[in-house]
Length: 396
Image 1 (cartoon, one colour):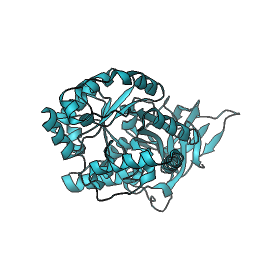
Image 2 (cartoon, one colour):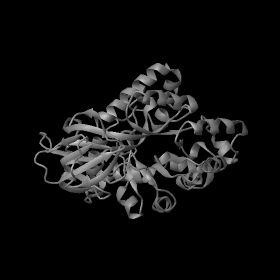
Image 3 (cartoon, helix red, strand yellow):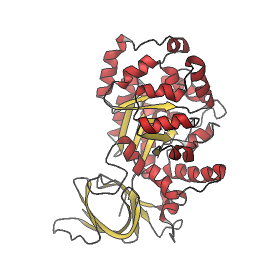
Image 4 (cartoon, helix red, strand yellow):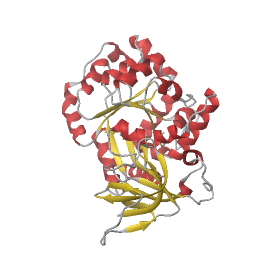
């Protein structure tokens, strides 16, 4: 397929090009140049008036709780989402799997409609939870990274005694890892150092929540005398999630020892836990990507995430933030953290993208394309969504 006469944001810097052509073959961008001639048997589409940007990468979701939207708004973080005692866990355990799958499918379609072409799900429920999501994905053409989790949570006494990984769980872990892309661990406060070290020897993607709340930070110090992030690093994670209350030292260590941080500012704010300090993260050299977190708490909408993060960060810190940096968090940086060929329009990368109508009411006239996408664009401005060179939503 040849896409002609399209405006685009190209490469790792999301450089704006007013008019170019893109040849797509085998689901990837094969050539990007203003002058490309089409072959006789090749589909050619004139995209005059459209802007193509990389597909959004939603680097942190919990789709299972799509069934429990906006329940217990005034509860604490632990009361809502603690993996053992939280209301979310109780709802999921009592819900019909058919109903859970139906609402997860709705969330996947919602993400596609909003330009999310890849999402990373921290999948609770062990092997059954993974298989449940895979059934859903058989019916929805969206890229996924599924990070599974054993239903293994240690209490404070077990963590203090550094109880090792249970031998009777070894086979279960091996079976789980065969069916998913890696591990999405709840946090250091549910796992001893020995267990985290055991997980660190697995070969697939590893990620963990850390320093999400002031309480989780203080609990770690109280139990072990170490920071929550310091202990989480025993997992040798490829990336961390949240880091809202991470210290300067924690962020420096994470920048050196991981690929980056996935932040979820709207979810943090809706839980009355503040928002992450992206300026401090960048100062320490951290690569930052965006996630929307629990559907129970938050809509899976990267447009809202970017707009909120951009404006609130400037409002609180009283420092200007380049909107291009925010847009990279939603696209390029996700690909970097996951080490996958997504999130960027570049030769040999997967041909995932969002086509915007440049003449839509909310966008025209576009004077700063990065700012327009970050705080003016929405589902209504999307003309089509493409994954692997195929239009999966809308038409061009």
